Image (cartoon, rainbow, N blue to C red; front, side, top):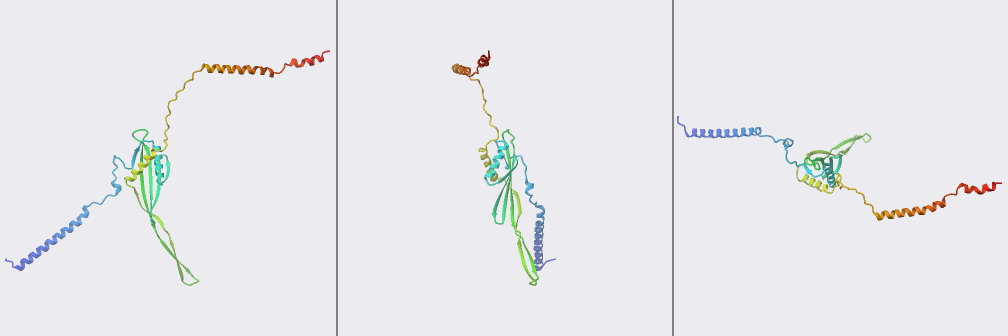
Length: 254
């Protein structure tokens, strides 16, 4: 059956419309299927690796754990942190910051010192710093007071209850922040008095040999003192009792 020109044009137009409709439907189907194929990002706490490599939050020191904690305490104090030592191997420090009038930041520093793994006179310092953010929350409360004497007059009373509300808390990521702290701890380790006792040198004792000349002079001095004291002792000695009673006995004799 032969087709005229009008029929051919109609069939060509319908073909183009069907083709465009098919392409549009496929595009919409692909866009609808994309969210199902894509995966949502994992939270940061699920991205922890817990590998055995070098930790950016730990550093080895050639000092005892007591000396390392003391150096860490002095390092924090030198930077304006308020420190507390609940135990000899643990230090907690805090420092306040005010970026603006409506925001407040508190940095909490935690240090734990443990003995080293290689030698007895080494230690490991583990550091963790948490940044807590606070924002000023403003809340206005209003109340009205009716005065019966003046009729239905109401006086509005407003009060502002402003408070700092915690809005964030995050561990400071590793980087130059901890590197600067460890460098300052190393500095104070060279200036802090070590708690380990100093090993004394071996003390050798021996007798001093006698000097003959000194002994002769000492003996002569002792003999001279003895001779000088003998006459004085004789002169000071009391007279015998019989000599004192002789005149009395003679006077009583007839």
